[in-house]
Amino acid sequence: MLEPADLKPEDLGNLAKIIPGRDPELRISIPRIPVSETDLQSRVIPVCEPALGGNEAQYVLDCIESNWISSAGKYIPRFEETFAEACDASYGVACANGTVALHLALATLGIGPGDEVILPTFTMIATINAITYTGATPVLVDSELVTWNMDLNQVADKITPRTRAVMPVHTYGHPVDMDPLAEMAERHGFCIIEDAAEAHGAEYKGRKTGSLGHAGCFSFYANKIITTGEGGMITTNDPNLAQLARTLRDHAFSEERHFWHKYIGFNYRMTNMQAAVGLAQTEQMESFVEARRANAARYTAALNRIPGIVTPPETEWVKNVFWMYSILVEDDSGMTRDGLRTYLADHGIETRTFFIPMHLQPIYYRAFEGERYPVAEMLCQRGFYLPSASSLTTRELDYVIEMVQRAHQQAASSSTAD
Image (cartoon, rainbow, N blue to C red; front, side, top):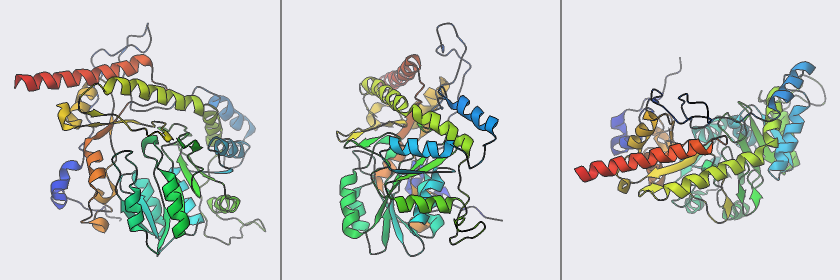
């Protein structure tokens, strides 16, 4: 039997305080805001949920009625073409999920044992796992304070002759500063694989994420801006990369004859029904993005007035899509991050903490033991997401804002009384 990696609090020393505890229990026993003018039932406001109000049901029913439900059918190429076009990319390769997209891109580029791939320690674990699957060595860098994205100065310092790729993560929907990274790639001869799982529709200097490197990798998990339930996509402008990725995702069947294999391939296919949902979602992508940006603007205008609350970044050279509306709770707020989350949970508002950095993960801790990444550690300790769905109503947004304001007022009153 496979044994789990063992990491005890004492192994982390002072770093143990960075690791968040369990999520606070959501309570729905007291009245909540009505979901409409006439509905006064209590409800929880989830941290994120999909919006399925377009052609999803129609397209899925078409799959069922036509019997094209597996990994062939018209919706797969239609989804690939439509999503790639939305990313200003020439080709799309649909696959089973976002982790698969990362692994498939790495495998297609021939990255494996003896190679190094640079990535931020502040990311979701799928990023580093995909590299590990290939046998390549992950090399970590810290985040920068301004954008929360990977620190490109550290990237430059960690390039070696073994560096085959850099995997920038567009954190929470804010694109990485890609031009300096592209210049490094050209000078040193490595590939750029965008982890754009959180950045559907985001832009860098007017260019869409997914078209800024050799390949872009997207997730369509249920909490993403575009969803297929589970699913992923590689986007690229390289026809050879796209063709080989399509071959590898399908057991590497040969065009010469069936059951004839020249590569070690994978069963990484997307179903026609998932692609049908994805096509319907992509048709609505612009409205989803604008809804998230409008929600973010409303949040920011109100929360910027609360001392000690740091709202998410948006530099002048990007269009942030605010996949998750993410805030930091500083010491001068009078609150702790966990205390604020508990207060919100008591009022039916679900939240989620930031990523735990890769160098502090039980499965990777020994590989990076002794390495410190202070910005990523600070983000982990202070950050969390507020409800962020494209479908949030103004009433729901204002309720969340009001509860954050009340929590701050309560903390301030308590501090004054002391």
